[in-house]
Length: 219
Image (cartoon, rainbow, N blue to C red; front, side, top):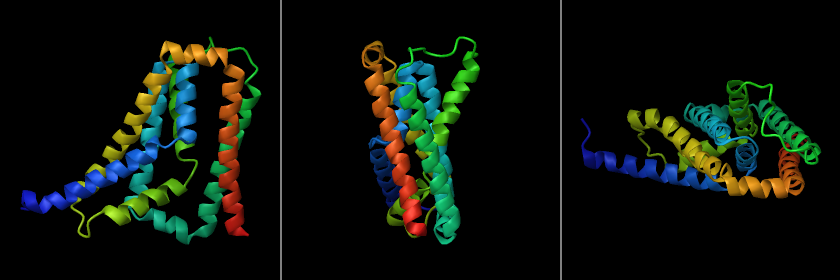
């Protein structure tokens, strides 16, 4: 049975991985835009559902990276490029939808949509944005390759994906709590057109960048 001192390097590596991925999660991107917007336009419950969707995406990508499938994505170039183009197109679509709705009157949610249905929609909406960029799996694989010990303990392989879920979902839960508070919602109401158009532009540009990267590599 391994001693506590023998497990110390593995614990240190685990903390380094989680710290690195937390910094990555905090960095602004399409995930932040979507969770904050869902939280401010709908409710805290919807924002928390979106946070869980982000967490599930992180769990999926970390499992893919640990299973070595991220390497397969790089080797099968057409699959990787197809996924990048599909993800970029989806972000462009979301950006256009948000931009076009910027001038529409504010509505927290459709009155005829059951709460459970709209919360599930927020969850899957966030999950789709999280997995829109397959490059995330490559980032996870790079972090693991750099920081995992040579002989990875089995417990570490089991613990990493759920801990990464907690990192992703936990950070975006904070975002949901902040942006679902009354003051951010009031600020959103006052600047809805500008905020929505900015959010739509950011998502659209990120989608264009993702698609352009794929086209450039394929060319």
